[in-house]
Length: 228
Image 1: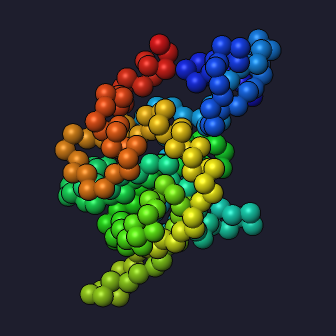
Image 2: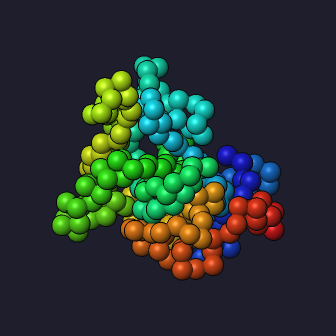
């Protein structure tokens, strides 16, 4: 494993402690032991997973359709949120304000990632959050499974699209703590979707802290900050 992100790596001898989201690796260039984050993340640019409401497919960056072990289109998508926000905004060149849910998670390749849902799918997530509230849990305490469901327009039977239904299982407490440790020390957000006019409805504690801080960088400054 190459050590390419100097901001996330320090020599093991200099580190006072290894945090839950860190590990000791061997630097491929120096041969020294170093402490590095387990998770790969470019600030403001998480890996982008998407849900296509036209065909019910999950994909990466709108290009690579996700498939299962048998090579079939993924029937459901499971992930454990580490941060989230529900907000209204006009995004992606659209002309009207919509309700959005933006969730961040660690994918199977240990990359900090994001996925967004809008409109009816957001209502489904809100419906899920009510029982969680009374169990004294948040979306960051559970593992979500999103399943596309085809719906037909009542006014025009020829028009169909997909919404997302959600279910959950309570996550392991150790993993929840590890993710909370990570999110406490890292500004996890997607610069492309942050605007000054967004109307936030519900945000996770970590994202609320982020919105109140000066840690969020404009998209154009990401590359410069990495080189500094």
